[in-house]
Length: 470
Image 1 (cartoon, helix red, strand yellow):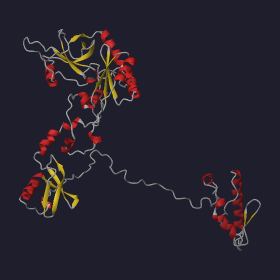
Image 2 (cartoon, one colour):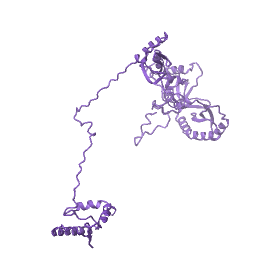
Image 3 (cartoon, one colour):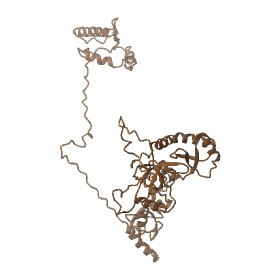
Image 4 (cartoon, helix red, strand yellow):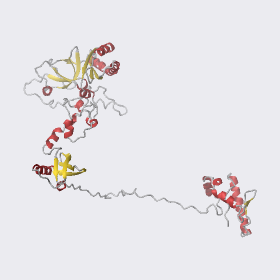
């Protein structure tokens, strides 16, 4: 619940909160507020205004008081009212002729003995009232610890101090009767004030404390609902709801009050429909009702020998089949009465009216520009360029573990494939190199020397593959 004080005065943009729990006096923050739509209308000639007003206390507790002193009161005024003992402090929530309507609704007679209003609250009264309100939360924690220590099956849900601080009312819920005589003695000894215990129901507890329902809005009982009507599971059955207690129960643990809101509409619609227990007799077999669409007037039936296949029939046609069955006759089959539902599918077209890109532009895979590897780039003359040398350095040096080297070593014993290496690690032609010319051998020796110099600069191992033949 928000009010004008909750959203103002913040430095970083977060609401500071009025911290009055619904007692700041503004209409939007109060619980169970009533809009006075007669406030701007004057009474007819010479008629005296109604002498009773409605006063609200903590968490939506409202009482009616008589204005015997003829005080000029308006909505939001803080007044001191009669209490036993002492006086109480509350906020005026309604004045005028609408109070008479509210008293009639609550069953309070005008000529009955009604407590009176003493005066408008002074600043001293407001200070005492505020100090008493600040004690309620710490007292609730201590009171619950005492109740647990005494092993009492009860829950202390709320504490309300009287306006003058002379009495504290403890609201509690319990399944059975609780013997709290020792509890009152411990409370009086601990808190040093007069104690009054008041048992409330689970719904009254939820209305006092408030909260957010499963619909995302504040609880109806704490905002506008004043009377609690009985709710049973038949209301859920009439509305074709699943009988799941976790979904049908509210924060109070009872069935939700909103189950009664649309119940009358469903009952009116069900008057023109056959019952859920309707059974149809056909030559193909007996059929049982499985589902009803109340507002569309459709009913689904299934044969007893094929419960998985449902047939949708209009309620008027079901009545015709029932009339035939009353004459002890059977219809041919349910398929003759099945209502075919044609679902109109709209063709979705896209028009590029403002020149935007295609909607499927991200569906096409991107083409990767892959460069073909330069075959033999390291084999030809000038293969020891900086780029090629860097690429070789990035590759893992696992030549020792290559199976080709072992194969070459094995092949070295074969005749015609012998190769020798000198002390510098240069490859020397074996007996099978007779076809190589003298000029080609000199060029090969020059390339080997250049390669060895580059390897020594980079601290690379001299164990490399054999140079390619020219």
